[in-house]
Length: 448
Image 1 (cartoon, rainbow, N blue to C red):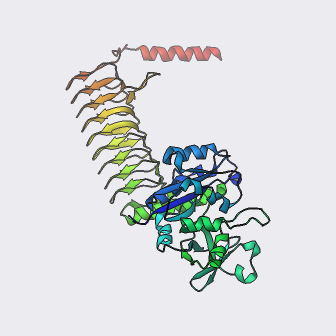
Image 2: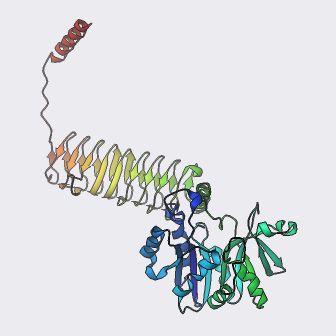
């Protein structure tokens, strides 16, 4: 951890009108996590002592999100919006007497990580900007260099043909000692077409003072901003690409990685096999040498070594599969611990409870966990056998080694090693089937 104090100002006051969504732009998810949270994650990974998020008065949802995660003292309000420089100045009072370096980042840049930003803290004076080489510079601001020194940031609409030929562009991320940054911002004017205060103007002001102005580079993908739904989809695709490459490099086998969807916090151990078309929601933890078969969905669940899931299985939050557990096709597990070697191979719902080691859950079994008002637990003991199409009405306990007959509706506890049968007695009536068919045929013929 650095011993030199660091702070981060995250700009999140934009209205995001191009998203055309009632959800504020920075709360749209990438990898099942709000873009703003990705920015906060990066600031925390940089060991920033203070993190201030600048929000707009028009987005109470963003403010509430920040308060829930960082507290009320992490919020600064820009009202009305008057440019990026004005937004950064809104954080000045919130930072109070902080002394150290501050970096300005953005709540709509979800792929930027601490490693992309760290270099701006390598020097402790002047202004440092993160740049990138653009495949298509287009409307990006250009970084005009004088040797190793940043001479100017020029907006594309104001650039000469020579400057437009520059492919090194401005990401918008900037760092400086906090006192210097706010001192420079106090000199920024809004005598431009939009009447706004631009953060980029501090570079020219710093040079006039003789302060160092530098550039450190990051990849174009890492600094990608999101302003519209199409760009959000692009960011998601880039995020998934990074996740897939990371897991493949770590020893996870995927025969069709482009079809596997990961969340921001997915964990998969080396030697595990992920078949095509698997979706991981938040909170999925898969240990080494597990197998996740096609069309399975795993969220908030833990899968231990040697366990097998799917195909077409759903693990919901609280599902906890022990070693060598088998959860097969069309099985849903929610808030159930399954101990080592337990099996639920087909067409079952297991909700709220536990399944002991080596127990077998037959096809069509249901844990009837909800009475319309409250949830209750079902406990299946070690080595128990639950026959097909059984309904276990919670709260209920099936003892170790017990057997529940197929088609049973179990409403009382079953002792260990007992056999439970809870179904109507079968009655066979000789010849009644043939008599029924003849009668039905005659009725049909008469109707014609």
